[in-house]
Amino acid sequence: VALIARGAHLAAMQADGVRVEGLGGKFEARPVATDDYEAVGPVDVVFLTVKAHGVPELAPLLSPLLGPETAVVSAQNGIPWWYFQRHGGPLDGARLESLDPGGVISSTVSSERIIGCIVYPSAVIVEPGVVRHIEGDRFALGELDGPTTERCRRLASAIMESGLRGPIRSRIRTDLWVKLHGNVAFNPISALTRA
Image (cartoon, rainbow, N blue to C red; front, top):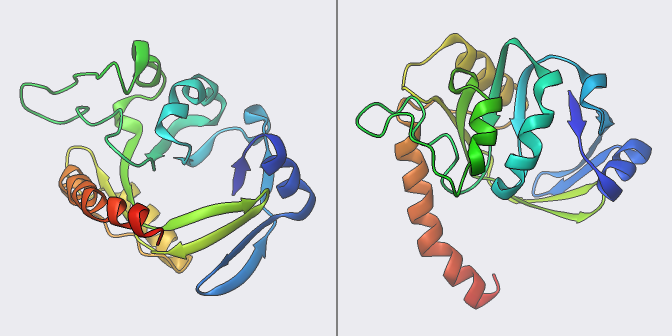
């Protein structure tokens, strides 16, 4: 496992590892932490965990991480840039300029690499190198065109071996809308009550 980060967060993880605090207690890990994509080299799976507006800047940097079989797991909130990739129907392959400006993401990350992911955990960086896990442990996974593949099985197994849940979903876009409907209902209440 290698973490690619920048700034104070990277410096803290290089010096002291990453610390996770939360409902299950605290733990510390010391994976490789770097900002050098070349040093990491090709990997089995890339998890994109930056905010969606950061992906266009990040996508062109990914090529050193991408081997012939590398899967890219998009773990952003909201409607993802890949929404219409391998979608089927009249909008199959459509690109939304607001999500993929100039096609920079889709020209770097082919749709065959993508595994959709719906992120349910809530966490916050409380200081560089320290993450507070608030709640949730599910990362729903799925191929964009629906089949359950061996690569999804391997990834789900790795997630579950780490103590998290990684259900494979044949209709990942449906799961996305279920989560977004929940966000529409719960996020305003959370903001208003400061909960």
